[in-house]
Amino acid sequence: MFDVIVIGGGVIGGAILRELTKYKCEVCLLEKENDVCMGQSKANSGIVHAGFDAAEGTNKARFNVRGNALMPAYAAQLGVKYKNIGSLVVAFSDGDLGTLVRLKERGEKNGVPGLELVDRKRLRELEPNISEEAVGALFAPTGGIVCPYGLTIAEIGNAMDNGARLYCNFEVTTVRREKDSFVVGSADGREVRGRVAVNCAGLGAGKVSALFGDDGLRIGGRRGEYLLLDRADGDFVSHTLFFTPTRKGKGVLVSPTADGNLLLGPTAEEVEDGGTQTTQEGIASVIAKAAEMCRGIPFRDVITSFAGVRAYSQTHDFIIGESERTEGLFQCAGIESPGLTSAPAIAEYLVGTLLRKKLKLEKNPLFDGTRKPDHFFKDLSVAEQNALIREDPAYGKIVCRCEQITEGEIVRAIRRNPPARDADAVKRRTRAGMGRCQGGFCQSHVAELLSRELGIPFDEVTKSGAGSELLKGVSK
Ligand SMILES: Cc1cc2nc3c(=O)[nH]c(=O)nc-3n(C[C@H](O)[C@H](O)[C@H](O)COP(=O)(O)OP(=O)(O)OC[C@H]3O[C@@H](n4cnc5c(N)ncnc54)[C@H](O)[C@@H]3O)c2cc1C
Image (tube, rainbow, N blue to C red):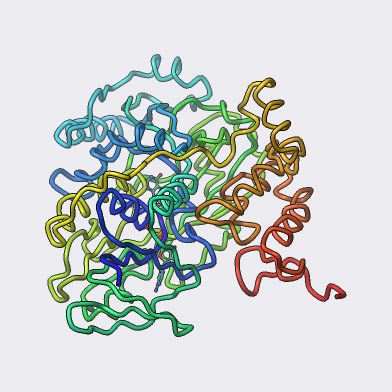
């Protein structure tokens, strides 16, 4: 019997699971896919928003500002890349400049520190590649960037190191109440029992809620498409550049990523199926908008395109707290942007205030919140690299040439928490396959390592779970 069952292995479920391990309780995470971080948390902009976008008094404003303040130490503890690069909301007209004044006032009411309006000249000093048409900007020094999948994986891995259990390929399809507990079942017949449950199922949160008897949650999907450029272009801009927001949202941004690539996007398109395909029209509109923001973007350096789907609620605010219809069900639903930024703050509140009170939780004196990074070899000094290779020769073999990832790092990602079970899982942890060649050279080697470490035949190795086998018809 678990004290808490967390449903959904994204950045919110991960943050809550980890926060729970700070207390003496038995906790588990149920994730429907073959790996954690398979929803919105793997495909977003990776921006740690300052907190001036959301209206005063909303959950979004509250958790964004607090999450922004927590993020530097949170990411450092978990060994995840975070950079405090600051953001600029760029104006292209007098109307935009008026909006920036209102945005600054709103940010100050929300508690965002250091907001500053900058003129045309200062904007050009900050960003030499900015468009000639840009007339000013709102500078937010607390804006930052973080690796979103690195963060999610590290939260869950750290929670598991502190005793949490993870069940993958566990799609919650049944729930029944027995005395004072829930029995939560998966499509394949497995069941877990828990005193309370936390619904962090992203796009699936409405369905999960209904299984618990609360059918009042409506979740919509809005797809965002992106282009990612080579790491050679990571310093094309130094801040995250946003357009001045309109009623339709924040629009396309131009930003470095925490791993040093250049990111352009996202679009915003309502979708019913949650599909993460990219489209010709979407990519064309990203290119057109990014070219309005900056001069001379090296579009020939695009290495991949991808899309993520925002899960928004009927209130267009985060829904956080115990369900009014089902006692013991806690909702973390409609967590669209700035959910990544807000994750540590949402977990702090949901666990430290609500669940702590409900379950009378006591502190776990054995909790260790630190974790070493998943990929690190190329950042070591030559002396440190040599010492590591002497200890384990697998660190002397480069598997991914583009990102300089060693066999030692890949084997470690397969063995440590949360264990990588497919090629994409290895990629999200180590960056093997995320470089210029997008896995063209290293994927077969990664598959060999997965086959060896998991003790499965080569043709059972998948890209991302059952049905995505990398090879078919290999002779036995
Ligand atoms: C295009 C885009 C750009 C964004 N940009 C930013 C940004 O720059 N900064 C920022 O702060 N935020 C941003 N966000 C928002 C941020 O990504 C989300 O708020 C955050 O990732 C939400 O995390 P989550 O854990 O709630 O959901 P998810 O990551 O979607 O996780 C939900 C998980 O639940 C699982 N699941 C679903 N149904 C079931 C079931 N029945 N049983 C078991 N498991 C189930 C799914 O497989 C999934 O893994 C962006 C989002 C998108 C889509």
